[in-house]
Length: 597
Image (cartoon, rainbow, N blue to C red; front, side, top):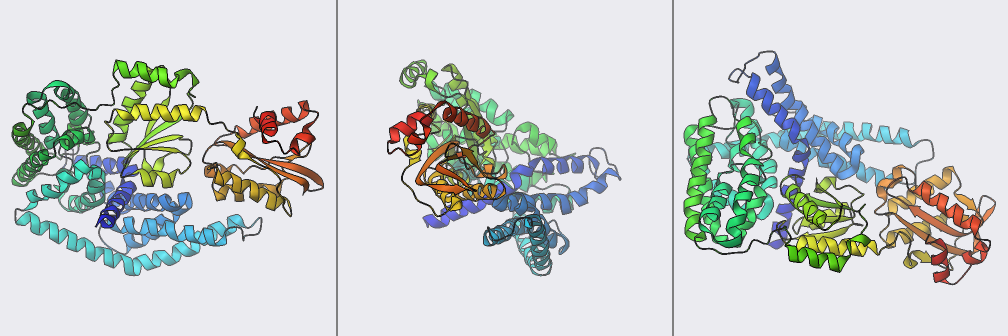
């Protein structure tokens, strides 16, 4: 059961991850639809011709590209776009579900091909093989998608649409709140909205110009009702925190901020379910919908995505859901005197943290990342509040928010919800990961400071990066050993080792004075987990095109600092007359002290 739950979560988030980077394009389509279709605000026959091609071709292709890129980078994105075109042309409806299937499949296929031929292509033929592999495989899978996958997805779409129509016609759509509202509180809101409800909504919007599906999860009414109940009936710190949360939730569109208020009193699930159902019933009775997904889910975005003539019904649904949630929640919140464990750090805690961590020793170039599915809601809130807390302690640390699949390689510390941590580690295994149950926890600041202090004590070059007394048949085997040490110490991946070997084939990295400095190509930088230097000793010497190296100093850098590092190494060698004795020494401390500069 637990495995099935995890699979469902990962599957839903994967669907969401394909949509979220392209949400701007969906909003653009929504604006064009709301403005220029015959029933729009300012009907325009010419501009309205954009609506069909955008939803039929542009949006599915963007999803297919993103799905392929998630698996295999840009090559995967190109492959995903090609095979997605097969399902687009093979059917007569917008292929969002087809794109979500074929995009990742295209990326998977090209990734498998690239792994199979890795290291087997003769120099000079790389571009030829890369281009023709995508061309040939893309052709085959696009035809497969056209002939077989498209009709299957079309059948599934018809089943989903029919099921939704049955529920709507039977007046049972309000019961969807029994699933939607608890799923939101468990931080599955983006997966549910963009992975399930969105694709159905776009199909309906193309036919009718609007869809109620866009209102089911994004309605801010239930969250507003919860926060109003705490503002009016609670006591103490929890009461004081609720008004600020209302602004962030209702006007900022970050719904995640009210989730902890419900989790503190799980019985409040009854309130959000009741309010959500009442809102949906109002939407059904008034026959309203939106033209696209409002993102983020603020009242402003909701209004912008509302077509002409639907504003009263949409606002009525929001108000009804707010009132019903508020009345139910009031019964359970009245008299509550809970303490919200906010990210805001007390003065006493700030003083204590300053004394414990010693801010002056912390490297302020460290990049701290908050990551969530969308890279907006909860992560934006967490990043903003953590940055503020760090500044109160005299630290100008860069804190940014990203989607899980967009975490940059330069990130040293990554904060994620515990349900997302495994995905973040897959994305960036070399970073320090902090797993939290919610982004409102007061412990996050302390945990980040702990990690920052530990990072301050971790150097680019350390004794554990030194390996003595090794033997190798040739320079390529020696470089491979350098790469293995980098992998072992979480400096780089195996792919970076291949990048160092590739560079060595084109130009020798022998520096002189018995030292070689293997490092990867510029393309190989994406496989560097963190900047680091390793020292591997070969007392018998390694032949580098007629020159003998007794030590290989491998360099891996996340930026262009390797040039500065090479310059410093040259300075150390030129200033040390006994460098050959150091290279052949059995004293790790001597080698460390010599090269740690």
